[in-house]
Amino acid sequence: MGEAGRRRALERFPWKVVIGQYLALFRELEEAARQFHPPPGDDPDIVDLFDAFGHYPTRPLSSEDLVSLTPAGREVISGRARPPPVYEDLASLLDGELATGTLRALAAGPRAVSDLAPLAGEAAQAGALEYALLWLLKHGLAALER
Image 1 (cartoon, rainbow, N blue to C red):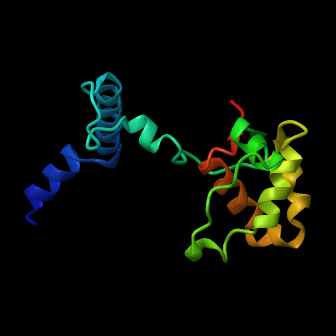
Image 2: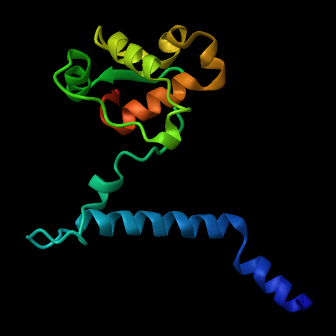
């Protein structure tokens, strides 16, 4: 790249400006998605994006986060509903007993992530509790308190 081109690129595209443009684009796209209302009908190709991707994380869990049991979680621990299936590829990552124990602990009321760590014991070091919590949150059996 020639010196003039390099200078022009540095003047027009510093990171601070580029990041600001990305953030403005994200806000614009979010607003467009919020204003979109699919036409009535059962077209499987048109989904509400907030429903489809609302369970995706927007930040990591912290030890201070409060987790609570959802009605679906209550149904599972009472035996009135079955837990979601654990796919074979994930079976080695999810400790089912830990997930069930976490649900039972949440039945007493919201708990901080740090308060749930003793349930996992040494497995907490390997991220077993975090994985179990994320799985419970993803499947709507637990929820983060706002």
